[in-house]
Structures are given as structure tokens and as C-alpha cells.
Length: 435
Figure (cartoon, rainbow, N blue to C red):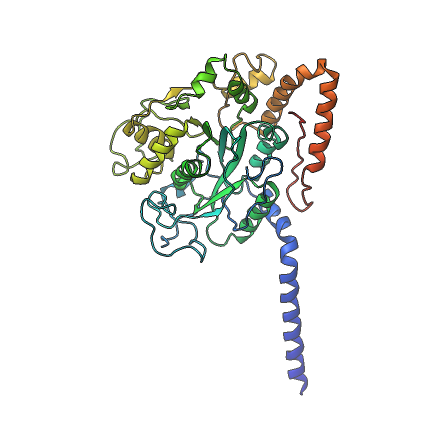
């Protein structure tokens, strides 16, 4: 072998060795790379995974379209002024897994979601246990990792929620193409927490109707025995202790209200004018919606449904023409078509009320509230949650035995909490030790 051939052989061997090393090291470095991408970007996207979640600890199992313009910020209900991608149509994110049928499913089948003939869950959860009275489905975007973390540390803290009749699950859409890292990261997040459900449509702003109808579908199929469905966005603080109090206190008027079989509870919007100007990110064409005003509807950030209302709105949505403004379609147009009346939520914590509460100018229960407005800050959520815990634990301070038992429970909960890998997001589990 001449010198030139030997050099070429050595170069080929070195290239192969480098490729092998990169492939071996890719998996351990995955989460660190994702976190670098996440910390360097304030925008949001979506992700998916086919991994199945573990069973929950003490609660048990508690034809492709053309590629759409990808939304590079989180699908918020307050779109940014420079977001031109909202004009894109709705589409599937990724084709169904190879095991899914390639024949379009009939409208009445479980694989049919509005006009998507091959809908599947890319990630799913076990059906609700019989003791679940309220299913809380949080609409989230894949890159909203920090928002999900804050929720898990505050009003959906498992050491509190697992001792209540509530169950909290996050809903996300698909990641689209070239987002395998986020897909794998979602799988690890779900493996750690067991609380993600994912549909095979792009997690884009104009696909939020799919996510909303998916929420109705999942409740209808896997949690229909529950008393309530709560649909809430991931930038809203939900006062779960107040809801538990309403459920457990028959003497309160809210208790009987929550038992209403026709309940559709929210802070409704009436005679909202349809935006037609090209400068508006909420622009709707006459072809999409011909009327001048929308019917009365519930803003999607916080809605409470009775099971019968979930069923009839889901059935109506399956037959409806797709409209990308999800809350208007489902709680406005379809609610009107099905004769469903909106019950107006009496108390709602606006941003000014949050500041007043945290500044000491108001009390947590005067008046009581179930939801804050959207876009609440992480430190505000933490502070309100601590106030809620202090109020819950206040009676225990006069009973040493109860306080001791509570501390023991907190220690047990802390030991059972899964340890988060250092390369993953730091998710310190807040231990309340409440029973």
C-alpha cells in the first residue's frame, strides 16, 4: 500500500471514530442541549414523544396535510405584534405512528377529531380513578417548561393534589419536523411526572381548537364520571384549595352551583366585535365568520364544564366546521347551537387585584376566587400559593398532634418525590404534607 492510500485509510478511520463518538454521546448530552436552546430563546413551540408514562404513585393511573408555518413563540392568547404566522391554516404536525391505520376514520370513531381523520394521542394517560371529582386540563405549549414547573410547585403540587379529589393533566400538541430533541425531552418530562397528553397536530396558535376539542374528548372517554372538567391555560393561577372547599361544603351556594348538570362557568365576554383589520393578529375573514359580533362566549383561559355540557359540546364540535378561535367556536357558537347557557363567574382576580392581595391590601378569601387573569408572574403564583397554604395549615397550629402528623407526612412525601437529573430542569418539589 502506497503512502497516499495509507493516509486516506487513516482519515476514513478517524472520521468513522468521530461519528461513533458523537452518536454515543448524543443521548447523555440531550437535555443539556435542550436547556441551552430553551434558555437562549424566549419563544415557545411544541414537542412530542411516544413514551408511555409510569403509573401514578398514591393515586394510581390517575393522510398528512401540507406543512404549516411554524409558530416560533408559545401559543399564547395574547399574540405578539410581530407574529405574522397566524395567517397559516391548521394542519397535522406529524403523521400518525406506523401502527396507526392509514385509512381515514369515520366521523364517529375514536380516531376522528373534527376534520382530522387519523387523530391519535402521541402521549396518553390512564383513565381517571373513581375518586376523581374534578379533572383539570391545562393547555400548555411544549417549550413552556417553566410554566408547567411553577404549576407543579404551586396549585397542582402533587403532595397537596393527591390528597384531594382533583387530578391535573397538561395538554400539548405535536412538535412538527426537525424537533426530535424537544420530542425526547417531553418524553423524559412525562416519565418523571406522568401528567402529559399530546395530540398529533401542530402545537400552533391556529390549532388551539384541536387542543380544546381534544380536552373534551379525553374527559368524555376517560373521566366522564367526574363532577367537573376545568379547562385552564398555563399562565393562570387556579385556586385549587378554594375549589376543594366548595366541593366539600354543602352549605355554600357555590356547592350547589357546581352540581348543576348544565354548568358552563366562566367570566363571559358579550358582543365582542370581530376583528377585520390586517393589522390585528385576531383578524378573521368574512369567509371564516360572517357576522359583525361574536356570540357571548367564555375566554379560554379558565372554563368550568359539567359532564353533560362536555358531552354535547364535543358531539357538536365533531360535526362543526373548523374555526381557529377555539373559545368562540366551542363556548359561543356551539354552546348557542346546543342551548347551553353560560353561568357567569362572580369573582375573578385581575392583575390589579393580584398586586393588591400581595401588597397586603386584600384578603385571600374576601372575596374568594377560583382563577386569576392570564399572564400571572411566577413569583406572584408562588406568593399566592404560600398564602393559600398558610390558611389551610392555620388550624393545625392549635393541634400539636395534627402538626406532628403533618410534618411526618411532609417528610414521607419528600422521600417519595423523584430526583430530577442535574442535566434536567431543576424542579424542586414543594412538600406541603397536607391530608
